[in-house]
Every structure is written in structure tokens, then in C-alpha cells.
Amino acid sequence: MSRLERIRAALEARFAPEHLQVRDDSHRHAGHAGAADGRGHFSVEIVSAEFAGIPPVARHRAVYAALQNMMRTDIHALAIDARAPGEK
Image 1 (cartoon, rainbow, N blue to C red):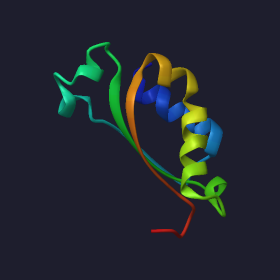
Image 2: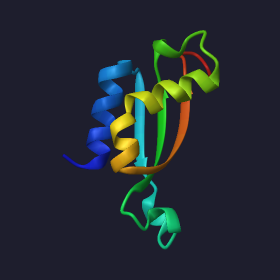
Image 3: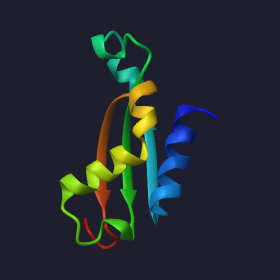
Image 4: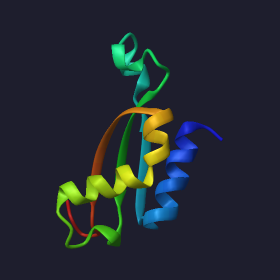
């Protein structure tokens, strides 16, 4: 299973999102010192009822917690857009 598939599976299992887009941005950071260890740069756009009434920082913490193991082994940087349904 690829990194993208593992990220997607972990987020789907934790948040049952209405919308989920995971993008590998690693190619945009080629040569970046943080990417030298083989971990990648990713962007996540996720819409889930789990985020309703929760401040943005708590949403980001929840996403990081869902990807906790991968943050140590596969992910160097993660851009997160986490919203509740109906939010823009």
C-alpha cells in the first residue's frame, strides 16, 4: 500500500469523511533538507462531521493523532484543511 493510500485509509477510518483529498507534494520539495530522510510532504483536505464545533487547532491535532505513526516514519510535512460539513 502506498503512502497516499495509507494516509487515506487512516483518515477514513478515524473520521468517516464526506470529502477527502490527499495529495503528495513531495516533488515540490526535492532537495529540501527535511526530505533527505525519505519522508514526504503531503496536503490533506478533509470534511467530516467530527470537526463540527471544534476549533481549527484541535482539528489539526486530531488529524496528526490519526496519522501519529506515519508522522514519525513517512510524513515530514503535512498541510491540513479540515472542515465540518457546510463550512467553506
